[in-house]
Structure formats: structure tokens, C-alpha cells
Amino acid sequence: MMKADVIRLALAAMAVAGWTALAQQRSLYENDFEKTGIGEVPDGLTVLDGAFAVRAAGGNRFLELPGAPLEEYGVLFGPSCQDNIAVEARVFGTATGRRYPTFALSLNGAGGYRLKVSPGRRALELFKGDENKLAVPFAWQPGKWTHLRLEVRKTNEGTWRVQGRAWSEGEPEPAAWMITLNADQEPSPGRPGLFGSPISGTPIRFDDLRVTALHLVCQLMGHWVLPRRRFVEAGLVVEIRSNDRSSSASRDLGGATDGIGHSAGA
Image 1 (cartoon, one colour):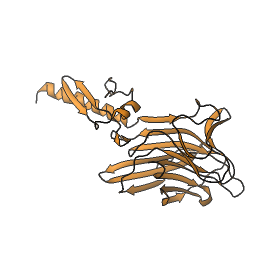
Image 2 (tube, rainbow, N blue to C red):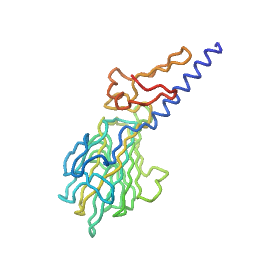
Image 3 (tube, rainbow, N blue to C red):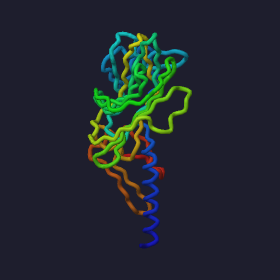
Image 4 (cartoon, helix red, strand yellow):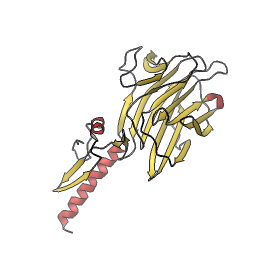
């Protein structure tokens, strides 16, 4: 192999490595509700049921579910994703005597995976649709924000790992996942969601939503996140391809760079 060929391959490898590292940390959606008017629902959120609206307290805006009626309600947000995706949020609720709210963060649509805090059971639970898959002890603290993180990651062909954790505001995020489920059923594409049941009769607040791509091959709407991309260095072209219908993903990831100063166009 000629010295020039070695240099070209090295430059190409550096470009791919830089682009991969960027993709592994790519934020696909964020919302702290600061730009939404009081009493409104942000554009792009789909309310499944419930009188969700932006409210404010202490100089902070958040999405609030009223304390009545005492049913379960939900809202979907962000892009429709299948796997290699993570979602985060923080949730605030209070207790009334021995009545506690329940709340959840989800991926893969309304019937997908839900990471649910159930204070009455003193548990953090993982559901797939209506089926309770796993539960671990969790001491919810009323009157404090609770952070939730859920991810669905493809591990091998035909296998996926679903992981979740929760922690109270002011405490360090757990280093290890609290819930881990290994699944052999392919997740359905669907949007992340928030769910709440105000059993205590007091409102539930949601804030700081974030959806993150975990991997180079994260999928949006059933298509690859990364658009077709060429790295051109020293006369060598290295191409990362998605399927032919990746234009919507390209718009969602507009402005990213490939690690060598090029914008990530299609």
C-alpha cells in the first residue's frame, strides 16, 4: 500500500470516528417550556387526554397536569423513534395523606416502554404497554423534583436492552441502571411520552424534556437518523448511507458536523 493511501485511510477513519462520536451525543429534542405562554400547550406536543398546560412558579415554567379528575393522562412529544434512543425529564408531585400521584416517562409511543414511579408501591416500574415487566424499590420524595431517564438500545441483531433510573433533585444521578430488561421483540416506532395520574388530588408538573440519539444508527420514523454523507479527504470518498427516504431525519439533524469541519448535509 502506498504511503498516500495510508494517509487517506487514516484521514477517513478520523472523520468517521469524529462523526460517530458526535452522533452518539446528538440531542434530537429539548423543551424547558420557557418560550411557551402560560395556559398554552407547546407546539408539537400531542395531548392524548387531560388538561395539560404550561404554568409557572418560582420563576420557572413547566407543563402541568391538574389535580382532577383522578384518571391517567398523557402527552406525546419529540420525534418518532424506534431504538438507540434516550429520553429524560423531571417530574414534581405532592402527597395528600396516604394518597400519592403516579407518573411515567415513555418511549416507542403510547403502547411502548414506560418507566413509572409508583409511590404507593414504593417502586420504580417498567411497563411494556399495560404489562408490568420489572419493578425495583424506590423511595419517592413528595414535594421534590424527580429525575427520570429511559433508553432503548439495540444490542445485537434481534435483541434490545431497555434501561431506566430515577433519582430525587439534589441527589447524584445513580451510576448504575436501576432497571434493565433484555428484549427480543423489536420495538415499534413511536414518540416519547409523559403520563400522570393525580391520585393525591394535586397537580403533577413536568419539565426539562430531552430526547437524545445514542448511536450512529439511531432511527427516526423507521429511517436512519444520519443522512447520506460523504467524507472527502486527499481524494478518497467514504460514504455513510441511510435509506433513500432520510430527508426528514436530515432536517432534524441540520447543522451537525462530520468531525472535520463539514456540515452534515444529505
